[in-house]
Length: 494
Image: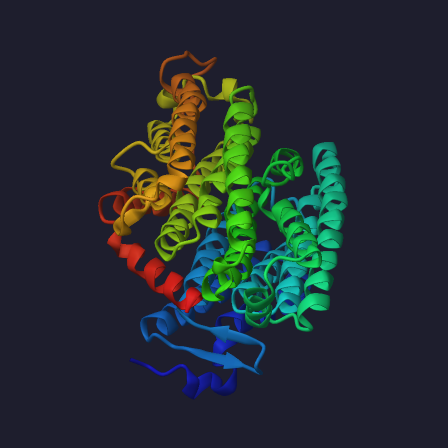
């Protein structure tokens, strides 16, 4: 296999990031010089594809290495970087055909979305609380600007203000939590903190620091009760941006939970101390409340983007099961569900964006009779929604099966302690089927005001087809990706 280190040398660990960092710096200038959206889009898409190819080659070559002692590339960081690259590719692919993003400042849009993804990648390669914080803030600040770029849209302005204010609160809580852990351990290195917790056990500064960090990063994943920003932001932002935030930014937040708390309480030996079980029950309560609130409130939504936002909140609750169970099998299942969620939720948002381009509104009632206007879009949306609900043999069923079985015990036997959490998750999946079925009913049963055929822009069609293929293939052949997730979980928890 080709050795990437012969090209990038000591900087091989950040090779996938280099192309995106370059793009974030040069794309505004390219757009100003060329003044053609297509050229800027082509350069951005080319850089994303090159970055993706480099990462895939490093993954298949099983490369492990670090740069400047700050970031490390391994199976875990490579797998998560792949997830972020897929999200970025889909967002950039359709952006030049979206009536929402083409009205924005194109050079700034591509610069910001590449910078946000660079921050995500930096986070998953970090093992220090401060470097993780820097990566999260790079993504957050870029995301605030992406949401606010629809300057003449009052919904976007309101969403951006809420996003910035709540994001500021999140940052304050996070940095306070980091300072408490630093005061206790004398270091911001996660492994050093884990070793100190294993020796000293639970203390008041430790408890305060951990709770503040859970709250701070809980905003990033829209876990209840830190979820209030998500519906407004997803509704107000341009649809490609909403898709990017729902499938990319949220996964970054979940990866932070994995890197900090799983490493402290599993890779470290702190599970034998009182702090471990206490944290498990705290995460279990947050997971149960998050999935329940997300699904129940989604029932009342009439706007498709707000419904998908509450659905994303519920999905975050499902993945937080990993934090309650804290086993390697659960971590593998959680990562696999994160990948399938990218294709399920990403595909649904792409369909919403394609329909907005065709002049269809964002209300669920606007989807009446869609099956006659565009049989392909209706069928694809049905499959994405049913996959999100966990209907077999789609990818959502397979990933939920692995995830929920992780709460019960997985291949190592039954853990009766968390059976109740698995039952709540299964019950919530049944609830979610109700509001997903409402959309299917509108498309296939109810009669629309027109039967005029809908023309789908080719980039949107390509993105939807890609998502649809993976939703079907990963449902019947999960090992195509699950092996990477197992290797990633093992690398994280060594």
